[in-house]
Image (cartoon, rainbow, N blue to C red; front, side, top):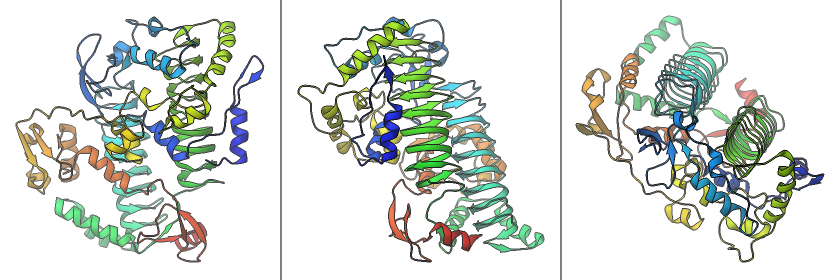
Length: 564
């Protein structure tokens, strides 16, 4: 990988100092995508399993399938005083590799079943905080009376939302903010009562529109009187399945009439890639909000100086890490760190500082492999361990991910995939970098063949046999399983979900929640840049619209002149 002069200087600035010696971060040897794929293989968001707690033996919902070798406690047990992560501490062995020693520790220290904080009636969720009456939501704060969201902040009374904030009483919303009483919208902001709209701002009462600003009573980008609009809108009061599918197809064809901007970014300065908002100096970043000085960062908001990382929130000075949040800073090659600082090669720490190679600690400082040291002992031992990590193995393998370690040693290489507690097809790596089982194994990752037991229901109905109209769906559907029309995987409808569909007169979905999640992802452009020419002025542009796609694509200047 070619590093810019700015990135090399950043590596030098990030490099830690112990006893007046700076331990320089070497240039990265893997491509940006390889780094992100590796980090994502440590993120299981959506795969949940029913297992027994290893402490109380009660049934719990867990990120870890029952065939994995880990000890797993419920959240209440894990955060209690019934056990201590210090009971598993190890002395550092200079005769063995660091990664093998950390893997031994990581296998022994108990894991928490889910990562939810201050939630009520929200058992089947992951990475949620301050939420209530939520079901199958992943990543978010203040998710209330909502289901099937992968959100960011404040979603209420809504279903099937993806990376959006301040959403209320809405359905199938993607990359939007400040939305009320709307459905099937993408990349819109500050609006209400919209149906099938995209790239609209400060609008209300619009149907099947694109690129509008501060408009009302528009249908297919044409102004109507209030009376004409209300008459047309009456067609949308009841959604049967076939009518909805027709509207989706019509709207997709309607969008092809309009030019698309080469990237979906607003209020940015010196940023490259896509879906970047209100950010500055973010190079090769994707799906970020309110960030400054980042390189090869994927997802989330509010950071300062983050490099080669994914899922970073409200943190700064982060390097090659994943799932870092809540005012954390100076985090290096770590995963799942909250409210912590000066953390190296650690997994799942909270309120910690100055920790090397630790896991499962809370409110701890100056620890190595979960063993407590004094500040002086810590600062003397860490440089010696770094020197040991800097030594390449005598007979390394040079295939797959181990190539970088073979060339440089362990220092400044992220954990090998063997340490990930999740197998590749359980993680977001498979969402964004999908590969076959054979390719996964060849690259050194693991593949899960575990299948959860089928739901215990009185009836399984194929999706195509569902009534088209929600008014014809009986209450008894809560005791059925629906066979997904794509994957044939069975799924259930819960009561609060059924109430939502009935309230909005929406048809029962015919696809499994996981498939609907993939469908929403596919409505956004993939993380791949193409060379293309502006369809208006012929300027060479970089865009996530491939040249084979039918959309009209403009450079930012031509797009702004055309739309605004």
